Each structure stands twice: as C-alpha cells, then as structure tokens.
Length: 251
Ligand code: ADP
Ligand code: MG
Image (tube, rainbow, N blue to C red; front, side, top):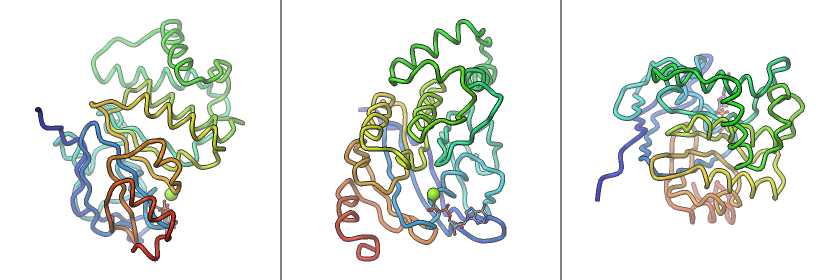
C-alpha cells in the first residue's frame, strides 16, 4: 500500500500577534485523506493557528516552521498558499456589499486557474459550473446574485464557505467554528456537505466546541489546544470525554 502523503507539517511554531505571544511551540502533522479536529477553551489560540497557516499578515511567526507538501511556506504570501491548495473558512465570514457572490467566486476560481497556467473561465461557463456545485450542497441559486455574505444567515454564510471550498477543490481545508450560529439541522446539513467533499486526496482541519460536529464528521484525530500548544491528541473519544468532564478535568 502506498504511504499517505504528508500535506501539512508544523514544527515548534511560535506566533506573535501585536507583540503578544499566542502560540508557543506547536507541532502538528496532517496527511492527505485525514480529518483533524481541534478543540480547546476560548483564547487557547485555535483561530490564531488557522490564520497563521493561511498566512494572515498580522500573525507573525517568530520561531518554528510550517511545511506544505514538503515546501517551507512559513513566510509565503497568503495568495500563494491559497493557490497551493490551502483554504481557510472563517469563523465570522465578512460581508462585502456591492460585490456579488458569483463574481467573487469566479474571481477566486480564475485566480487559481491562472496560477496553474489554465485559461480563465467565462461568466456563462462559470455559471454552469457553480450551479452544479450549488445543487450539490442544497443552496438556493438566488444566493449567487446577492452581495457576498450580506444579510446571509449564519447557516447561509457557512454554506457559502463550503461552496468556495468545493469550487477551489482545496487540498487542505481549515474550517474555524463552522458550527457557530447553526441550528441542529443546518449543522447536520453542513457536516454532510463536508463529508461529501472529503476524499483520500484532501485533508480537513476543523475547529469546534461541539461534540455533535465530531460525531457527524468523524475526524481521525482530535487535538486539544491549551495556552498556545496542542496539549493532548487522541481520537473521537477524547471529544466525548471533554463533553462529559470539561477541559479542566482532562488537562
Ligand atoms: P481561540 O480561537 O482559541 O478562542 P484566538 O486564537 O482567537 O483563540 O486567540 C488567542 C489569544 O490571542 C487571545 O488571547 C486573543 O485575545 C489573542 N489575539 C488573537 N488575535 C489577536 C489580535 N489580532 N490582536 C490581539 N490579540 C489577539
Ligand atoms: Mg476562535
């Protein structure tokens, strides 16, 4: 059997934000085909980790390295990380009045094609492509012509993130609290979309507080972040324990 390829490797990562040290020696390895969940108390550095992997300029790596498919991307620009196949879905997706959702999606899609030396796709062909995706995730086509995320409900914003993720066919998708603001049905729905998207060539790293989401998405690994490091790693049962006993007890 062929060895699974290591997609992401983080070694001894230290991250500063506004001169405050947030991540303090974090290690993580994710192989293609794997699903990893990160849990942990508020303020433990989960979103910071997500942002630093995607290259957010405010988050400064002061020590350690991040590798993607073996390449050192510690100081790579965010666009180039995105073109390499890293996708970040935000905890709170921004609303962009005046930019239609479909224009935004086409821009993102074409920017990736350009990078791969492929021809840009015209609006009509893109419309066909995106319509297929939108049916797959049970989203109302009317959302394509609305302004990006403007007035979208929590669930709709999250669906839109999943739509971006599937259009870009990212190799590593990082989803930060995809469950925030969702009711149980929407949670089930979005988990199903994520599970349909996932395959042996893609990896997913998702951040959550909810045992429910862990049950739906069934990650291979569950990591608990605390004070800027991954303090504990295990499987789905770890999430169950957290649910029952709380972080303090486990850590
Ligand atoms: P989590 O997602 O686990 O709740 P965060 O990564 O959002 O935690 O935050 C970790 C810590 O870093 C918090 O104390 C937060 O206040 C701080 N932090 C994060 N981003 C910034 C920022 N842009 N400016 C100042 N402090 C920040
Ligand atoms: Mg967070």
